[in-house]
Image 1 (cartoon, rainbow, N blue to C red):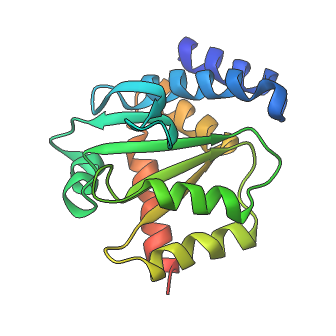
Image 2: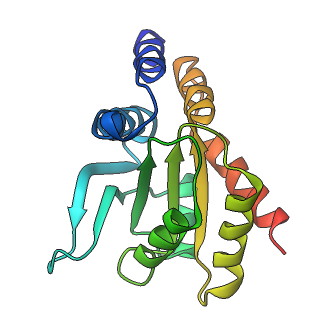
Length: 177
């Protein structure tokens, strides 16, 4: 519970904006490691493609044999799970387009955008549009700071935060048309 509380405190101390984007990205990696290890392992920052044209913020290897992560690996070819971090007030279509571009056969078709605030309606609609317009389907889920704090509270209480991610996934799947 102490580590979860410390991570929440650190999160609250980073202001939104481009100046602190690297600090936010590093903290999000630390939080995700705390929340999802040993199912998601080997989290790496700033993973570039071999030609250097694409740079993903955080990528984990999906090493789960059970739970939601194993389902994601099978259903969405998510051998890797990507988290794009956005230390911004809101998420525009460019961020969703970028994330959608990264998802596919090599990386898998499930990705997350970790952002300071819950996404606005336009961002949610864009995520639904990515899902509807892609074949096989690509899913982009959002995790706000509030979501991260809820996940940390669960982990701090000895509960599995993956169950909450599964609920976010289910909500997306039942809401999308």
